[in-house]
Image 1 (cartoon, rainbow, N blue to C red):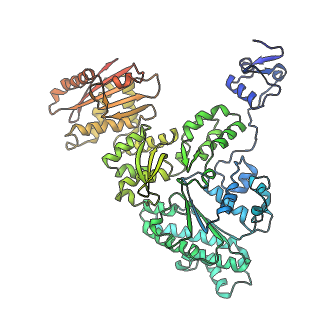
Image 2: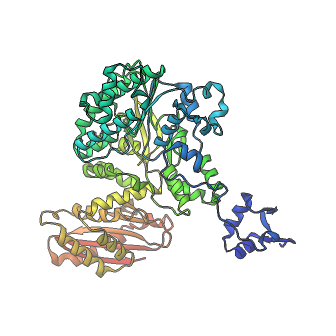
Amino acid sequence: MRYEGYYSTTEAAEKLGLTTRRIQQMCKNGEIRGATQFGSRWYVPSDFLKGQSVSLQPVDRKALPIGVSDYKKAAGEYYYIDKTLLIKDFLDTKPQVSLFTRPRRFGKTLNMDMMRTFFEKTDSDTSIYFKDKKIWSCGEKYTKEQGKYPIIFITLKDVKFETWKATLSKMKELIAQEFARHRELKNSDKLNDYDATRYNKIVDGTADDVVYESALEILSRMLHDHHGVAPIIIIDEYDVPIQQGHFKDFYNEAISFLRNFFSAGLKDNPHLSFALLTGILRVSKESIFSGLNNIKIFSILDDKFSQYFGFTKDEVKKFLSDYGCSEKYEEVCSWYDGYLFGNTEIFNPWSVINYIGNDCIPQAYWQSTGSNDIIGEILANATPEIRENLELLIQNKSVLSYVDENVIYPEIEKNPSSIYSFLLFTGYLRVVERTLKDNRNMCVVKIPNKEISFVYANEILSKFDKVISQSTAVSIQEAIYQKDIVKLQELLRKFLLETISSFDYAEESFYHGLIIGICAIMNNTYIVESNRESGEGRYDIMLTPQEKDLPGIVIELKSCKKEEELDSIAQKAINQIENKSYGTALKTKGITHILKLGMAFCGKRVKIDIIEE
C-alpha cells in the first residue's frame, strides 16, 4: 500500500543505497525525521529523501574506548558505559581487603582507575568526572568520600618477562614510580630523617631488596603520617607475575617476593583504610595472603559486584542502539555473550567494543589480547578422559566437574582435573549449572560463545601444527569437501611418510587419533564426534555440518598388516558404514547429503574408498 508523501522502507533503502533492515532500524531509533508507522510497517517522508545524504554516524559521536584504561579519558572523551555504582556497592560493604577475580580484558584496570580517581585526594577537583554519573545521585553518604584519601596504585598487568631478574627489576621500577608520584613526601616535615633517606633510596633504585618487599607498608605509613588519613591501596592484576613465573620457570621466586610484599602492606596494617586488588585467580593456596583474615574475595561465582566487570544485556542493547546497529544484537550474543558472573549474564566488553568499532564484523578479538598458554599446557597434559571431555566441549556440549576456587598453576601437571577450574576462571568456559556438594562447587560448564570456540580451535591447530603443518591440514580438509580421493590419499600418505616412525602405527587407535586430530580443527564448520552409536553400531568418526550447504561425513577406519589387503579392507570399512546404517544419526538431523569414507591403513600406506548419498 502507498501513502501520499511517504516511501516504504524498501523504496527508501534503494534511493539511499542502504539495506531495508538498516532503514527500518533508523526509523525505530528516531534517526529519520518524520518517519511514521502505518500498521506494523515504517514509512519514510519523501521530503526527508530530497537531496538527503544519510549519515551513518552513531547517535553518540564519541570515539570507542578501545584499550583505554584511564578513567578520566574513558568517561570524558570516549563512549563510556557507566560503572560508577560499583563505588556505592563497595562503600555499602567496604571490606578491609577486597580481591576481584575476572578474566583478562573484562574492565578490571578501568574500574580500579575509576576507584582511584574517585577516592584520591588531589590538588585539583576530580568530582567533575563523576557529577554526571550515577554515583553522584546516590547522596552525600557517598559523595563525601570523594577526594578524601591518599592512594597507593600499582598495576602489574605489564610485568611479563622471561626471567625473574627482569621481573624483579620491573617490580622495583613500579614501586619507585609510585613513591615518586607522591612527591609531597620528599620534603615532608612529618617524616623523620630515616624515612626521608629510605624514600630517596627507593626512588633512585638503591634500596635493598628487603626494603622493596616492605614497600607497601612503608609507603602507607608515610602517607598516613603526612596526610593524617590512612591511604587506600589498589593493586591491579596482582597475579600476572605469578602466571608468568609459572610458564617461564621462576614461579617460586615470584611467590616468595609477592608473599612478603602483600603481607607487609595488607596484614594487620594500621596505616590502611582499605585495599582493592584484581586478578584472574585467587591463588590463596600459595599463602600469598598468609594469615590475612580480613580479605574478601569476589570471584565469577559470586553475585556481589557481578554486573560491574563486563557488559550486561541492557548495556549492550543500548550500546548497539546508540551506534545504530541494534539489529546486530543476536549476532553479538552468539559471538560475545554466554558468560555468567554470579547470576548476571555478561558480554565480553573488549570484543563488543572492537566489534562495533570494526563495522560490526564478527571476529575473535579477545584472542589477540594475551597469551593462551594455559590451553596449550592443558592440551599437553590432558589424560585420555580429559581429551574426550575437551572434544565434547569443542562440540558445544557440557561437562560436569568440581570447580576449585583456590586452584594454583602447578596443579595443571599434578592434578589434571583442575583444568576446568583454570578454564572457567580465565574466561574459556562458562557455568551452566552450579550446586554445592560436600562444600565444593559442582558445576556444569561449556564453551560460552563462538569467539572462544575459535580460540580452542586455533590452540588445537597450533599444537597439532608441530605434527602437521596448517597448510597440509587445510588441504586435507579441502580434499574431503571436494571428494578428491586421489588428492586425499596422497596428502595422508605424504603426511605419514614425513611424521611417523615404524613404532607409531601398530594399532588402529593411532590412525583414529590422527584423523580425529585433523578433524578437530574443523569445529567451526563441523561438529566432530567419535565412537558414538548410530544405526546398528558405533561409527568411528562423524562430521555434522553446521551449514546446510555442506555434506555430512561418516568415516570408518581399518588397519592391516599387509599392503595388498588395503583395497579389500577399505571396501570392508565402506560396507560396514552401509550395513550398520551409520548415517542414521545424520539423517535424523535432516542431513540428506552424506559422504561415507572407508579408510584403510598399513604402515605408511593408505587407501580410501568413498560413496555418496
